[in-house]
Length: 463
Ligand code: MN
Ligand code: MN
Image (tube, rainbow, N blue to C red; front, side, top):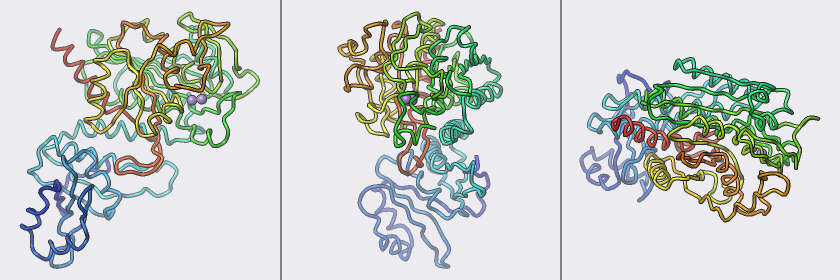
């Protein structure tokens, strides 16, 4: 990756300190450097950094002070803030896990979306620390960068076919099996809901189905909402609500990123990735409010609002994932504004039918700095998605608990003997933060990687 180099020649040392170490450290360096640092007001909390000159006026070192413990994002603000010509290196005495974690933060903070800019934005680089796990760090960071690229790419250049092609390229790289069901084949293959949502676009709806790994290993199925552009359909969005809708395939980007991490790291799993990819567009054959469709599962659904299209394409994919069987089923979707109202943009909502799994996911996501927060599959609201004419209605009958009623709708299509997690995420950073650049974001995938890793290894060791 371009943010890392091998050659330490000419690199500036990074001193990464917890605040409690700061005073002792200052006492041990030359007096003029200590005075320079103090004169720049390091404050008493939060991350802070400063370039420290030697007697000749050149940069001798870069000091980074972090809150305790030194976290993954400690260096994430540096690539963009240090001179772009600078190369930095960590001390050899930083332990391997910390070095890997700091390097990952560096990589997450080095991202920029350059596809449409004529000159590449250069940032400071890091000598990859020899004690760190480069294969792991790069597998994770590359997947996140790729997912961000997919979300940031305008809908004009990332329609259902292009999103499917991204999965195909991933499959080819890892020698995975790939099946794509396109356009009217969706009807012939009994994916009527995906077809109904996507049929109004001149760009045909698709279901991409990738399978990788040992058939006897722990089975993981990932599903990602791939709405390449969501106009709202006939229930058209106002312009403010439509503006960011190139990101409505953020769930697919997240599932693709997680699949990429799993395969790059060669985890002992049987992986299946399902991406229903559509445009929610408007034309004479657009699906309509109160239309009724028979889904893959056999239930009929009544469309409450054509802008609640994500759950409609997901229901066929979840039904397929369930009927084929799996040991873990996860779906990622930019599903509801209600989840953002409840938890804000940075904290995806987790719904889960298994308390142990929910706790694992929440803990792992927290530990790797990729947090989620659990909301309930509160069955008391199931009556909200009752329909007068069909088995289910896609939207609630009240303005309340929209994230929950959407999750309850999906739950109807999942075999309840399968541990299932549903993540309702924003997939977008509204403003720039260190390691979280403004624009498309892959949320929760790093935490799920740890959950999948722990479970598949336990499964392998037990069998
Ligand atoms: Mn919508
Ligand atoms: Mn949508």
